[in-house]
Amino acid sequence: MEYKEERLRLINSLKYQGLSQEILDAMYRVPRHLFVPSESQIDAYVDAPIMIGQNQTISAPHMVAMMCDLLDLSEGQVVLEVGAGSGYHAAVISELVGESGHVYSIECIEELVNFSRNNLKNAGYSNVTVIHGDGSEGYPEYAPYDRILVTAGAPDVPDSLLNHLKPEGILVIPVGFYFQDLYQIKKELDGSISKNEKGGVMFVPLIGKYGFNMKS
Ligand code: SAM
Image: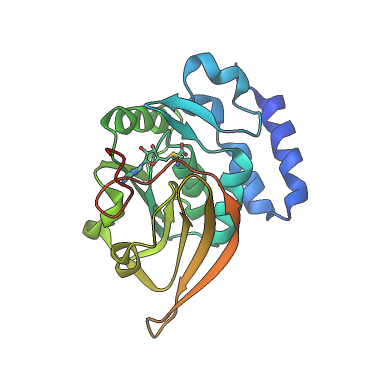
């Protein structure tokens, strides 16, 4: 099943949120049902998060769209995503940065590294690289990045991520435990940082060196 009608209905329902046509078109091109467990495919075009195993979720489509909007993505950009999960958000970003851009998506849970890699391959995305590691430390190999996206709630804004951002780059990150404030952070040409709060959100916690300690 291709779920084209369901996908169109979802995209039409997002139209009223002031999103650009580029974002809506990109989301229409990504088959979200290929990024969820097979038993959840029927729910893939409901605007809600879905469990993907390991107690983690694929974010709700309106949240993916809103974060892409805050990232102000364009052709050719190199993007770091922290928290690959299902690979869906990386696929939407890949559509927006095009063949000349690249998405590096880092995921700390091995099962989800494999899940997201398989999903991206099945959906035909070749300009997304999923890396197994702790994204709270950033990923120096391909830094600096034009854009950085964190898809889990962080205790604070890690310096590592700010250091891996290009001048005139944008970092989008939820900060807080359980409920978060979503921040759009801009690094100016002179290296100074401006921080804009964009409302309340709810994400699973960022773990790792600069994340929450979930063991205690
Ligand atoms: N972007 C994902 C998608 O499109 O499906 C949704 C991500 S889910 C809300 C958050 C993800 O962040 C989880 O897969 C979780 O394992 C991952 N995560 C949490 N802390 C991390 C860390 N320090 N480094 C890398 N991934 C992390």
